[in-house]
Image: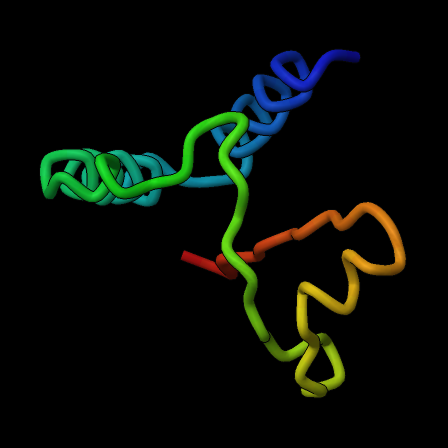
Length: 82
């Protein structure tokens, strides 16, 4: 399954799990973010993420430079419940 297909599957699943009000609220929040101009500063495909230090799942601070020294790095962000 391609990434585009997987993302479409996730969108379809969300439509089935969430109520109409939740979906409307999410769409409104997305539209407001786009209208704010925030996308102009967002990283684009192929851009490099600047070095960062963030807490891991155990609350320990982790430096991206140290992780990259050990090999490729995959960063997953979880926004949480709406």
